[in-house]
Image (cartoon, rainbow, N blue to C red; front, side):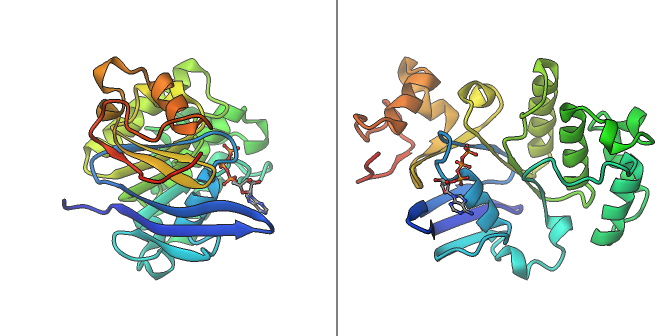
Length: 254
Ligand SMILES: Nc1ncnc2c1ncn2[C@@H]1O[C@H](COP(=O)(O)OP(=O)(O)OP(=O)(O)O)[C@@H](O)[C@H]1O
């Protein structure tokens, strides 16, 4: 498939006594929204941080367009990421914040206004970030990630702080972004957030990827997303697909 995708293979990370990620293998494809779903503490953030070169893996590879993040020629033009929403200085205006990131990433200053429009913050560009609600900060974080018009978007729990209308807006935005041939990978521990918004699903539980495939396959044969999710994340769970032909991972224990 053409385009810039994400390939994670055999990825592992152990923190003092905790196997945060164990032999994680999955792909996120261009033109598709991939949901990275797992309970709290499953290893989602650690995996995304390794993908973005922020945490060093103990083993395995995490590639963007076939290369590790650190080897990308144009990092912010290749991948945009929202890992948390704490980044912007409260005394800065949104425009000032975005322009500073344009300068850092080597992008035209006018990109600040270009990304404000689709993220719904044009009317707030001259307000100080300190006065922003959590939802507005979330939108500003997404706008910052879009400055380089990246081929890949990586979002860690992007719906945090968004109201229901904001969640619907984000879902639509990400679908359109992927429809233009880009790769969207977003994590969540909230099932319902991903129920309507993703094409593909990667399940992670206690550091292990327990299922990978299309959402349609996952919920095939009348199985609800909730039922299938519980089957792949509970102790008593059998490790077979819920009547699906996706990619159940053999030998996985919850
Ligand atoms: N820097 C760290 N030092 C020690 N342990 C860590 C560190 N980062 C993560 N962990 C541990 O690794 C495991 C996975 O954490 P991670 O944040 O990746 O999970 P998550 O799936 O993103 O969880 P959540 O949905 O709660 O954000 C947890 O047990 C966590 O406590």
